[in-house]
Length: 229
Image 1 (cartoon, rainbow, N blue to C red):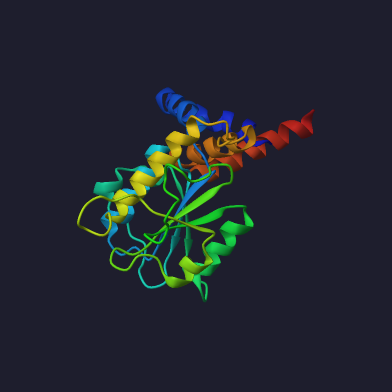
Image 2 (image 1 turned 60 degrees about the horizontal axis):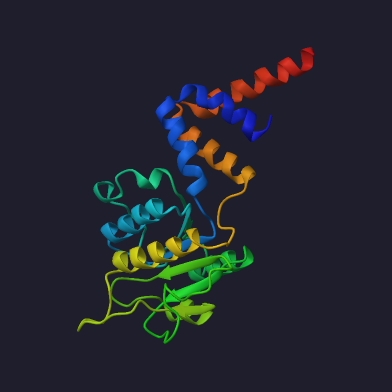
């Protein structure tokens, strides 16, 4: 049974309104851009980044937990965490490098947000290659290891007396600007048809009560019908 066939069976147990939302939102999702959160310890900041990622159309978030555990505040996320895929790195000897290596293997440029960058900003960064924007702890920023391993550094222009934006604000400015540029570009940032169906299927599984048992029954019935033909 293909993902398409399974999805067509599962959506029968989902409201028409939710089905319409899946059809409308899935084509706006991207994996061309992703986010890395390294050791964020304030749940409201991590939650705000998750919510922003959902709103601008990112499907994946990567969370590095070396010292601080990843926690969310439901009053801030407003359910957005249900619709994005969170990849957690917390069991490796070096969680930061495990995350960096995984992203680079998938073809991402790892971009460290930092005042070090003199030229690259959200308005000027090249859009052609997939990008993973990294944001660090509230007080000290990204680790030296991640800064050194990054393929590039990006800064957000500032014109005031303070030295940095809040992490959730930094993420919002960066992601919104980059996604607006992508949507106006010729870059192929959208998911292909196979990935779209897989995404909608994953959402459907979250909506349907006892989805795994229902899916097992659907597959069993399909196999039985195939044998009887």
